Amino acid sequence: MSYNLLKGKRGIIFGALNDKSIAWKVAEKAHEEGATFVLTNTPVALRLGELDELAEKTGSIVIPADATNVKDLEKLISEAMNVLGGKLDFVLHSIGMSPNVRKGKTYDDLDYDYLQKTLDISAISFHKVIQVCRKLDAMNEWGSIVAYSYVAAQRTLYGYNDMADAKALLESIARSFGYIYGREKHVRINTISQSPTMTTAGGGIMGFDGLMDFSDRMSPLGNATAEECADYTIALFSDLTRKVTMQNLLHDGGFSSMGMSARAMAIYNKSLEIEYTDIENRAKKGKEKKHE
Ligand SMILES: NC(=O)c1ccc[n+]([C@@H]2O[C@H](COP(=O)([O-])OP(=O)(O)OC[C@H]3O[C@@H](n4cnc5c(N)ncnc54)[C@H](O)[C@@H]3O)[C@@H](O)[C@H]2O)c1
Image 1 (cartoon, rainbow, N blue to C red):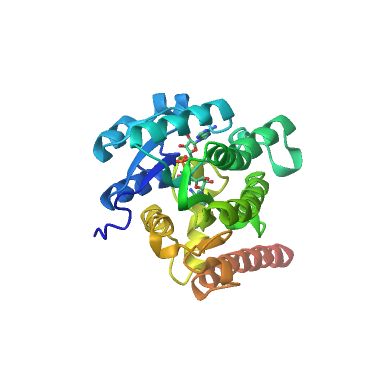
Image 2: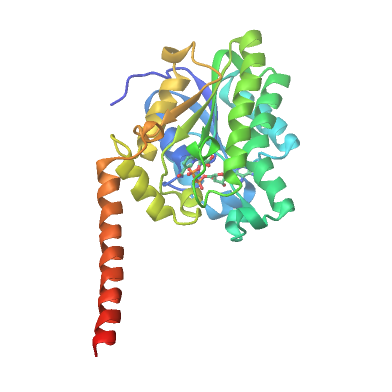
């Protein structure tokens, strides 16, 4: 259902790779809500992905940019203002990648060149996007900038690796720049901390199926889907959230406030039963051997 929440608003959406991407869902919903926008991703992702299909569907144009490259960002943001016919009202940073995760390097054996890349792509690029927007005076008053985070920024989750450090930095950038851009131009900057979601980036995390199941069992409302994340993002781009800034907003079905749920405990107990039966069986076998 459309509410015309973004009627007349202009923006840039980073990070739609395929129809599983959270940014893809945001683009579809932003279009339904009356926004016009530019889609962007790296040249490699454009070759691999299906962004032209999304552009056609949403009446958008695609401008390639590597979000770690300031020159690319300057070109992208200037061109976006030209093609859209004015300053921007919203920017979505939906970007994440860890070469350490990709190459199977664990947190106690990180490759430091890869770590630099993880931080640059997944966090510092957010600073670069905001800084270029500000230098080009590209945002309208009360504009909204959003990036996606994960609860591993606050709590250790096995397998999330150096992306946890990147997310902690990302959230900090939202606060530090949120102050500057807020006081000057009333531009809001927030991160949404999203449930595990089956996308290309998400699926790369070690043990992701198990993590998704555990997180779903722990959350009273269940995992938030990519579509639901897109709905929340649209609300943050709209005029209905004008005093929300410098926040890390948990969009996780309640996961982050839970310690243990009945549904998760049931599975845990089941695996204990199996383990105990196993131990008992092995003990019985031992005794039988002694009696023989
Ligand atoms: N999927 C999850 O479980 C989950 C949970 C919480 C947060 N997030 C975050 O959501 C965001 C979107 O990820 P997704 O799950 O939709 O996966 P995705 O793989 O569809 O999106 C990641 C995007 O980052 C882009 N990207 C990588 N390097 C880039 C660069 N140098 N410049 C510009 N773009 C670049 C990729 O091309 C891709 O489009 C990421 O920040 C991710 O960490 C995802």
